[in-house]
Structures are given as structure tokens and as C-alpha cells.
Image (cartoon, rainbow, N blue to C red; front, side):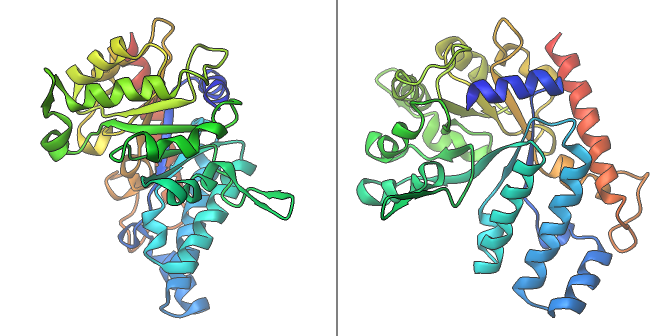
Length: 309
């Protein structure tokens, strides 16, 4: 999967990951009105407006971004209707030629971890294989150690799927645990070493394993240290845009070929119309909200390319 991601990045010309993390407050008024008239003021209505919102944005940015990252919690809060929206969003993305990283942040042990691994491994029913989630990769919480990671690894070894392990996250309180000194080094360095080990049997054609690392844009020094420490690990980089990360901060996250990372922007792309004075406010905006997302994605592309120089 990482090899496919690298090819997509080369094709699109920038390592942009669009986070599809819709919330009700982002929904344009016309979408709310349309779906409430059709489904009532119900979870189904919200799920359908999310799906329409996602599809319009993907229509506008599919030629710019290599991949999307739907955050499953935004959908799960609306129950089965929300999960149906998540699945339909993944399928629509795949039909648009986009790779999909499911932001599920799962972490458990034994049979539970094996069940979560179905997100990339699918399920067997009486000799027939099904892939209900259709994600190309997922995010994983490593707090439970190797027991929580091992069930995912067989699906990475053939290169078709990947995982991204939380190593140094972008949130302000990440240091409460991740920066704790253990045997002379921060905990995130120990997690990084484990991620490197977990990926040893899944190195792809471009020299990267199918076990990637989540490394935030908001901690520049740590990110640069981790790039040196993890030459075979592809980075998923959150924290760009709304959280303060900029293209210039990421110069040393790239490898010598200008690759090695995919940079996520969620609100900065999908909620762009709410901050761009060129577009109408939420209670007036029509379908042009997606045009604002395209404008934001192009600006992000320019910023990342300029920062890489």
C-alpha cells in the first residue's frame, strides 16, 4: 500500500491527505434543510448530509490529493446510520481513485485485536472472503504493545495494506506520556523502535515498510529526530493547518527524494468555506462550499512544495 501511496503522491504532485471529519456545525444550511425534509430531524438525516458533503468535496479535490482519511468517530456517534455513511464514503473515495486511510485508532489484545484487524484483513465466512471496510490502511494505538499490533501484520506483509502506529502525536498533551523518559530516552522513541521492528518483514519497493508512523507537524524537532531514526518508516503527519503546522516545518520530515510523508489537513480543507471571505456564510452557502475546499487544497499544495525547497 505504501508503494501505491508514493505513486499517487508523485502523480498528484504533493503529499496531501484530506481528513474527512465532518461535524454537524460544518453542514451548509441548504444540506440541512434538504435532508431534514427528506428524513426528519434524525441521525439518518445527519448521516446523509455528511455523505453528500463528503462526496461534493471529493469531487472537487480528487485530482489534487492522493488519499483521504475519514475519522470513524465522527460517523459512529450517529450509530448504524453513521457507520453506513462511513462505508459509503470509503467506497465513493475508492471509486474516485483515492486511497483511504481509516482513522480508527484501535488498540487491544488477543481475539479483540484480531477482530479489529478485519478493517484491513476482511473476514472469511465458510470459505468466502469479504472486505466490508475497504480501507487501504488504518491508524493503530500501540499502548498495549506487540499483542495489539501482531494481528494486523499478516495483512501488511504482502504490501497490499498498511498500518500507521501512533508515535508522536500532534495534540498539546501528547507529552504527558509520549515524552516521558524511559531508559534515557522519551517513550515515543521506544515506540518508534517497535514500529521499525514490526515493519521489518514488509519492506516495499520504495524502501518503506507497511508499518508507518503517526508523527505530528506540531513537534518539529521530534519529527526531524524520528526521520533520522526511522529511514524505512513512512510518516502520516497530522497537525498541519488548523493546529498550527506549516509546510516549512516539515522540510526535514522528507527523505532525500522529497518523499516519506503524507500530510493531513481536516478542518483546513473540508471547512475552508467557513473561514474564506470569498464564500458565503454557512446559512447562505450553496454547493460552492466544495469549491472552497479545492482552493484550500491547492493552497496547501503550494505551501508544502515551497516548504520542501
